[in-house]
Image (cartoon, rainbow, N blue to C red):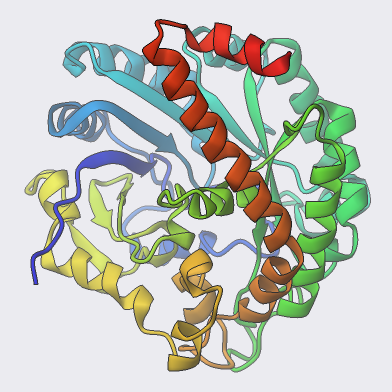
Length: 400
């Protein structure tokens, strides 16, 4: 069997390693400081930064994305990212580079916002919703709440015209408040939303899921309610809000590969680069077992296509026969591997199987109809284009 070559399209970089100024209850990455016992503070050196960006620019295609994450990436300071822009320009050879920045927001100010706006960075802001939801799990090192600060930062970023996605962790608590969450983000002006189901083993009893972990039943009900809210806000057949999960699933309905790795047949399509240059298979698998090498000695694109990474990607398909026979399997492919691995009940069975079935049984009819309309519009556009018409003119024509 031939192995498909994976181009280097994106990397996820952790320039401050697992360091963070918050102490969120459900965070899985703070404990990664155990991997780097030689220092208490972890920061990417100028040499590693330059080597990483040089490799990404030289080994990628015309378009590439760099996601800066943590820990908390803002701990590096703004000058680190100004230098990143300089290095991207130095080694970019005219390529289009998309920079993403996932942050808890507490260290950002107007200078950060102006920088993000000037260079068109996409910000993923960890804001779990209104105060009673956000402050339940997202507190600082002194156990103080952070909601007020983060909400003010959200407003400030929007005022400066920065592209912001709301990143919401769905817990056993917040899953009960789909409508409140959705309306809260809308009121703030955060119309791009990403909801991430949380499951972690209990630290005191690893045979059990932590109490904040959302159950499949609750997550399924959450998705169903959220889908109806999203659909109710359509205008002229078009969504007015963006929810990543639904847009990802829609790709599968029109015959396209899902853009989100959790819904691909295999994962392992990107790599994670830690502050010291170590490269790992995935954000959720930064562990010695999944270490692919180090950029000081190996090429990133070679590590992405290594046998070890190929094996990691194929492991996603190791699901029970019942899953592969499910009518929805080609829509979800079992979901994210980490949700299965971290579920103490059964490391082979996808934790959110029931949730996905609840969602697809509820939304399938609408998504099928939307897909048919989308395909027809694409076909009509191709015919229109052959007559010399432009896409903008076609959109005006459709509206009529």
